Image (cartoon, rainbow, N blue to C red; front, side, top):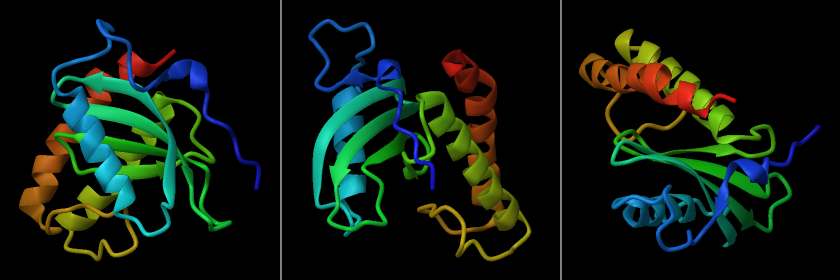
Length: 157
């Protein structure tokens, strides 16, 4: 497996300096949510470092965590996405930038939306914290379209 190391020039080490233009009023709450989400997994032994990848106030936040696990099958780097979308993580062993993390998130969530629309099993798809039904699929689909059209282009180089 050819693991990549995330491009740390595309993220900011946390905590951000006071007055940082990237900071917003919801950043602390989003970071807390991302930490709690990550720590909910038993394979996370400790969070070693935290980085801020991107934030659209109240909509979406992308964080990068360096973790220790104690398990060889768990990557050292984990991207976590939280906000007005279902929280999710992306292993950092094949995701280098916040753009790639969000792009992968959108793709994985679109797979969930399609399965939920068609009444298919979502058991092997990215976990989403709502029932897999057409109504929830439509709601999530609208958010994903917004992210794809309005936010993802901002992260492109």
